[in-house]
Length: 251
Ligand code: PEP
Image: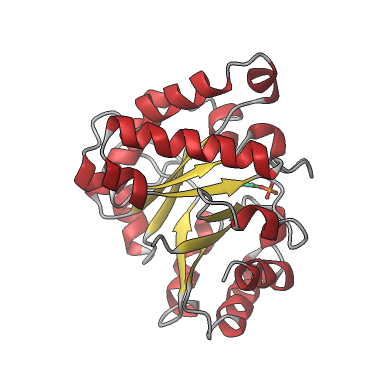
C-alpha cells in the first residue's frame, strides 16, 4: 500500500516571517495526521529556519533545487552537503520552471538526481509535457524521454528513494487542472514504464504525484484515482487553510 504524499512548493514566495508562520500553522494544525506524508519546499534561505520550526513534527521539508557538485567555483549554486546542513531531507529536481525558465536539460537533471541519492536526500523528480507536446500527440514520447534520461543509471534499489511528480506544464499555475481521465491515463503510463524498465515491485511501490492547479475543490477527484499517490501543490500550498485541507482530504 503506497502512502499518499501532499507536498507544497512555495516557489519564490513568502519572506522569513510568513514562511515560518506558515510552517508553524501547518505543523500545528496537522499534528494529528499520520496517514499521509506531508512535505513543504520553502525558498532556500529559509530552509535553515525550518530545522527549528519543524523539528519533531510530521512535516518534512526540502529544497526546490540543488547543484550536483559537492563544492567548487559554482557561484550562486547550493550543494547537496549544504542542503544536508539545513536538516532538509528532500529536493525537487526538474520542476518545469527549472526546465523551461532556467533551461535545465535532462542530462543535468540526471546528475542532480544521482547527487541527491548519493547524499541521502530524497529526490522528487518532476516531469511533464507542454500543451503543444500534448496537442501534437507527442506527450507519451516526451514523458518517456524525461524518465529515461533523468533516471539513467538509477538502479532498482536507488529507485526506492525516488518520488515522481507528474506535472503537465499547461496545468501549472494556470487554474486548468488535468481531468481525472487525463491524469489517470498518464499516471498509468508512467507506472507501466517502471514495470517495463525496472520490475513489478518497483512499479507497484513507486509514488507518483500529480501537480497542476490542485485546489481543495478538485483534489478529491484526483486523489481517489488508482495510480495517483498524492499531490505537488503550488498556489494552494501558500496558505495553511488550503494546504491543510488538501492534506485532510487525502486521508
Ligand atoms: C507547482 O508549482 O508544482 C504547481 C503544481 O503549481 P500550482 O499548484 O500552482 O499549479
